[in-house]
Image 1 (spheres, rainbow, N blue to C red):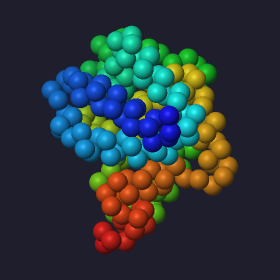
Image 2 (image 1 turned 180 degrees about the horizontal axis):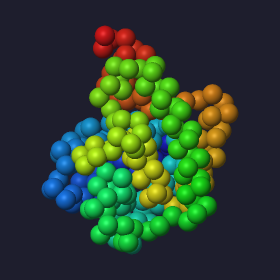
Image 3 (image 1 turned 90 degrees about the horizontal axis):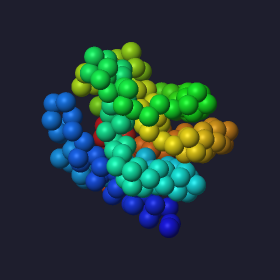
Length: 203
């Protein structure tokens, strides 16, 4: 498959999973917006390498084959920080990443913390309505960038986390900011040339 075919396949499978997630308070508003879900997930996944996409697609297909809902697990992990009481009954049901995988997740997060902080400064209008940066601001109904990213990484297989860490490190060494690349892709999904164009035209 080409990169775009990999992305389209992943997004289709993710939406089929995400649209069936049962929240404590019923379906979330975003579960009625496949257009928004598709735009956001495509923008993110298009920042990935082909190797990373292939590995994650295998994760998604393996989960589907064994009856796991990766999207449900991701949102359950978020509740560890946003709603600790509700998480008490969910935590024991979740597959727990190994120590090595948790260490890799921490290193990935450190790259993205810097990248996202830089993106927030560079594109204040584009990021104004986004998630708060750090988990200190988590609360029921509001999930920080930190908690969202950590929760997503926890649903990946050890192989995918390893590939992601290697890819993130390569991007860092080459001066590529993946948070900015994601914003560029989001802007293009909505008809702008890139994030700079979207920021300028939104003023």
